[in-house]
Length: 389
Image (cartoon, rainbow, N blue to C red; front, side, top):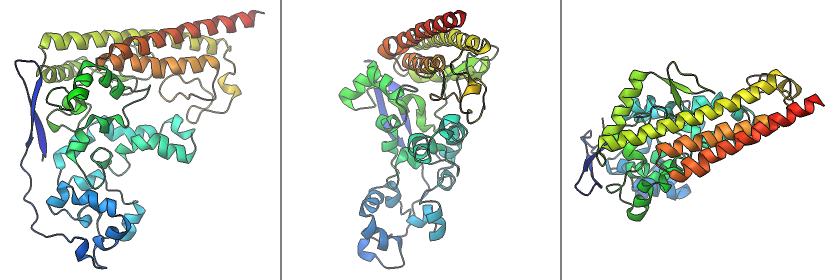
């Protein structure tokens, strides 16, 4: 069942008026949970009040504590099983009380994050500590046991307000491959929020991507999907991208425009989103040209070194890999330039456009993409010139 949802309305000034409306909950338990003063060797608090007082303080401040949801309700009472799971609680446990949210989460890109990373060559090329901290530190949200709700809600506080805060999203959704938080912060939306810290006056991540408390954060996305985005069915993708049918694109765009209409006219919203679509397609075109250059060098055996002359790629062996699971190490200079262009310049450009940041769209995005393309063209000329000598 839904715990809560945003009710947003446009007002005469054009700002957001919002109220967080609690929805119906299951009746609270009548049990009185023990506090530290009640600690005995037979309850969880006995040890954790002494060993992890901060953990207990987080739980005491939570809605779970107010509703008498005890430790064993989430963790169970089998200590060996708890230790094996390293104390983690899978989303399927949360589903018992929060079924609708869990099912929405399972439809989202968040639910696929662990699977996508676990099978990615860039993770496989790292040492185990880097896999855990540098990759799964974010991708574990879609963990192997059904996902981790506390990736956003915070362990033991399990706070809806914490999860709604843009700072929560920014822990993972930042950096040159997906600069969502930086682009939003640089947009007028982010500037107004920074001035007010009031989501009723400026939309946050949750306003647009979790409207009404919807946990399917993929809702409303069209060409601007995760990773390198998407192309419409029937169109050619220059590198690995999602595909979306025209019918689905219309459906998702209509959904997003309805959200925008709470502050903007439909005409303005559609115009801005269609501009972002055009920018995405132009960025795709430039990546396609770059991919053709690298493929030509590979075909003519001019990459230095060639794939067969270096350590095998974790999943593709000695084949040429562009986009998707492409490595940023153990490659030729031409491939290195392409990686920066396709993984960073391309993403900054179109994600900046969809998040309303002029600087990310232009100077940090397409300017970087085009400069890298010029560098790649020069490398192509250099390698071909050297081959003739």
